[in-house]
Length: 408
Image (tube, rainbow, N blue to C red):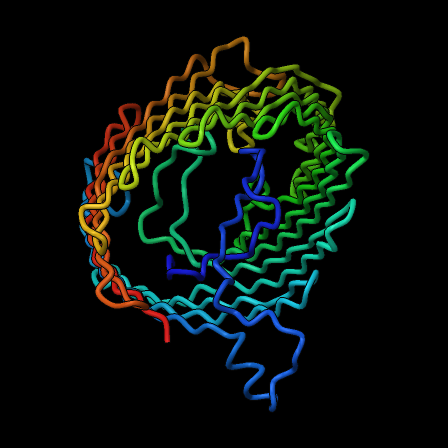
């Protein structure tokens, strides 16, 4: 769901530096009253601080199960609704977000409801520190995947829909040591439960802790160095448990008023429960360019290792460039062109004891435009098209969609 102004929890510290964690969306809370005076009634209090959104989406999928030798097209109807509450009180901001999406697959004859429930708390007294905590509960009904070419690029199972319940908690602190240096510790916890009998590779508990030391060389240029620890726990097969220790180095550099760069480099050591270990390096790069008031260009590139639990801990090297171009056709219409490419490779040298298979190469790319039309102040229409191609699994997929979104 992409209702305007209602996109998850607010990010009190701007961009999310790490591409491996949860990316939080911005919320414009400028229209929510920030006054010391209390409203006359409790109803006025709720009305001033609550946003209600609703929407409808119709999608055509040319290859639902991602199998060219057994294609099935599908029409999917989705009703969307969201309630967002935020109460800014000086240095304090807290709120709740509840999203409900009901969908129906017409030819497969499957109907279900997906829900996201979130809560957030941010405190910024304007001194040396600021602090925030987010929590999100997600209940989703999705097509299942088969574990053939890794954990990312996979086919769907014919007609199999299963429910996943997940919890995510994120806490972050920024503490200024002096005018140019600050500490930014962050803790994340993810719990995911795919509710089927044989799900030892999908169920997992992930705990991650990061601490960075930031240094501001000049306005618009920040360099950070730090460490990261992550524990991945697989309840169904504890031998697959993975502990990751990493050193981090990155920068966020605003070159001019119209372009900025982001870079993150990590050296990771994976230590599995059965005593095996591997050391890998990864990096990510991001570039944002605004050549004019109507145009924005974004480009990202990522080179990292992916541990495939479905492939019994086979290590894949994943290279993924992507880009987008957004152009305001008129003050009320915006055209966005986006594309992405992912290549995963694995050789016999990437196999840990107990793994299986030989050399594997998976490639996947997608491209597509979408047009957004702001028909009224709080209403918009989105038309989109997406073409996807997997060369390894040898399938193509076309998506055509229509969205109507509004805010009461």
